[in-house]
Image 1 (cartoon, rainbow, N blue to C red):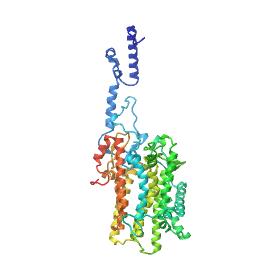
Image 2 (cartoon, rainbow, N blue to C red):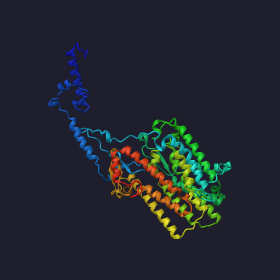
Image 3 (tube, rainbow, N blue to C red):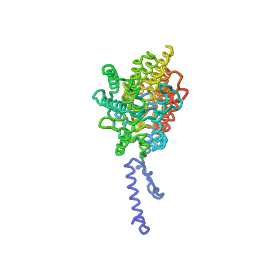
Image 4 (cartoon, rainbow, N blue to C red):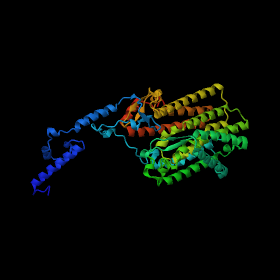
Length: 536
């Protein structure tokens, strides 16, 4: 038997045979025979390669290493025309089109990237964000309470940070008419969303590298909704002031509906396939209910997350503002209310722009990375329409008189913010759609350790890592300034939004640092500021 002391001759012959086979297998796999693991010194002496058996893989490795190093320089380069995009809400990054990628030559096999440079796969860090399950629990409880408290503190009688008088009657929170209005509005938006009008676009590759299809007709839905409001008041005598009268009851309806929808989606996601789960799916019920367990919950082609992101809440926000305008016009008290008209106009422009560029949301962090749980569901259906409309409601209940020069200055500030916001978003969207566009030839991009991925380091995206956030913050400030300085509550939006965007930028930085490693550090050295140039 091989390996027994009684038969040394056979053992030597067996060792020689195994060694020869190992050399044959090593050559067939393109590696040197000398790399065979666990070879004894005696075997190495017997296996000294002859000149005819000189290994060739080392020269190939050196050639391939030189090619790889040249292909990934560490300094910024001009934008290539062979780039396509992949963007999450952070710095712009692009991806080479598959048909344009270089394939390794058979004579020069590609050398594996060192472990230190390998991109980290997209794996969820269970229970890590928002303080894990404990933090998620407090968010689930405190955020709805925040909506109630802020709206109760700001009423027609006063709008201060003083402890409010909490209504104690159940009828102040629940009303069947409010339920009918809320559910009717939601169903109306679902009908508009599924109409076979508007273009169908492909989203970004998600798990399994599949691209989901989305129908983008949000701008049409906005126009139809506004026309429906006007027709309802003019021809059917619909009292639009009911929205203001049943304000707390409508808030309750939105919160309860978001809780129910989140529960249904969570229960449904318990049986979802692993490749359908969100990156943050952890197995913890509270955390997954908050973060969202399923990435893209759908019924057929109807995508719940995509729909809720821009439709019922965002269009509902504009509809609420129109109801406030109609009430102010009907009361004739303090009309024309120019600050109210101005703020409602600013916010209409903001929402119309978002819906006109609806497909741009398909590359955002919400769509690509976040699951659809209570965080997004509640934010879309309750937080946005009933807190983002705080300034118009304040101006309806507490009219302000501002000189023309003050109104002009606010309008200019809003326009500056909008130009930064739209300019930066348009630049990255154009870069994604058509890297060949001559208008973008001046843009520079930086290579990363991820094959085909690059980061923009010039244009708007050279000023800071999130220029769209900067524009958003300026816009939010312009919405609050017409409210004057008698109350801090109308400034809740820009204060909250600054905290939100800083937190989101920190999350984005952590994900990119994990993904790109040292290359992200080089990028941060090139683009030093996060949101506000020379400040932060």
